[in-house]
Length: 107
Figure 1 (cartoon, rainbow, N blue to C red):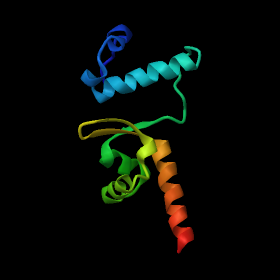
Figure 2 (cartoon, helix red, strand yellow):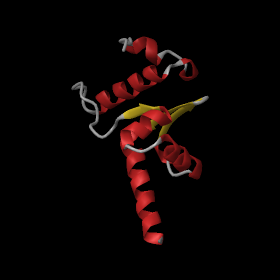
Figure 3 (cartoon, helix red, strand yellow):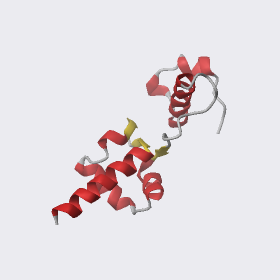
């Protein structure tokens, strides 16, 4: 991980940012919200791509593809540029759990 200069990130166009730089911007924003004490919000963890989200949740990638196709994970998508997707992992897990409970209740 490379360190990013705050001024250079704030002056950069969003479409030119890498995923790492985008996460650095989110961390800066959460640090400002927390009074500048350098800690980020505990509940926010970002994962890059479907494979990483599947590993975080503990399921196979085809399940994540299916949930994304059904629109279950739409609220957990932080950024999507081309094929690269950044997910809010705790929110994605919560949405997947709620969907699974709903399906079980229907049976």
